[in-house]
Image (cartoon, rainbow, N blue to C red; front, top):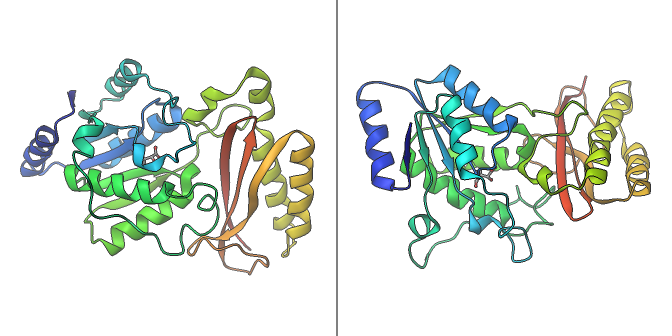
Length: 283
Ligand code: PAF
């Protein structure tokens, strides 16, 4: 397994593979790998001949009061996990390699970041688009995999691929959950034992709402309010819970037959922000 922080080295390696007509898959990560990442790596491996993983805690996607400094870093453990998954190359650039000088251009996102996680995390999706755009230009994979847990990120990156004409196929990997339903996330490491026990309640609320909606409720606002109250009673702080259009990511009050929706939520348990979602094809 090649481990490099050099742009030219990873570029040349991928170029050689492509010359040999090998298909290259890519999983961008910020490290602190868990089973969710490993499942993405496995899926990429099924679709391609060579898998590249990047590990880069991207400062551009953290707000000034967010957790950039304390974001979990465990590079040796991550490399071991990548090796076990038969990853062909791991790209681990330094910040000085990814952002070597003052940048004169910036990313602006129109509409797709107006709802869901956008308002609470200003600049976050712009930072994600910036770094993934750079990584795509460096690695030039044929396919890249991202997790459904960050579904707004996936939809915004899909627009980026389309609008910036990247010749890359994006695939979304299903959410991997712990036995009690909690969606796996590197940030789960922040939870205290007591918070960890409470954390799956968000998923349970989403499941409950989904079940009620499937049994015929098409205007779920009261149902959602009730679930928010239940979560608040368990000491969760709610950012949002609701249905959003799968395409525009706009909030939806009335569900229409034959449409696809994202039922998504973001809550704080203590200081830790948890997000989760379910996809619903309304019958
Ligand atoms: O989902 C993540 O881990 C990050 O947002 C990504 C896509 C690796 C960009 O830094």
